[in-house]
Image (spheres, rainbow, N blue to C red):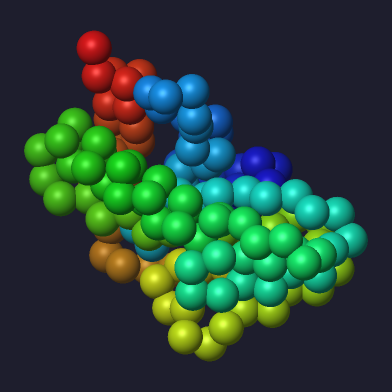
Length: 151
C-alpha cells in the first residue's frame, strides 16, 4: 500500500507512513494533497472474500471492527492536525484492503471509502481546492511527532 500511495507524490500529494500514537497504536498512512487529507487504514487478508457493512467487516465468518476504527483514527487525526495547524483540518477515512479476492461494500456506507490497493490511483484525480501551500502546512504539522503524541 505504501508503494501505491508514494506514486501520488508526483501529483502534488504528500504521504506519511506508520504514525505512532499514544496507547501503542498507529495510523497506517496519512495522505495529504489537492483532494484533502485522508487516513488510510490498511488490512491484508490474502485471497479472502471481504464484506464491508456500515460498522464492521466480515471475513470468513468473523467480524472485525475495521470500519469503526477507521472513523476513530480519522477523528483523532483531524483533532491533532487542527490543533497543530490552527485551522480546521477535516480528515476523511479510507479502509484499504490488500491482496483480497473479493470486496463487497454495502451501498449505505458513505462516510468511509473502501477500496483495494490498486484503486488508490483514483486519488490522483481528486481536487478540493487545497493549494500547495496549505498541503505543505498540514504536511509539516503531520511530520512533527508532537502533533500526534503530545508531551
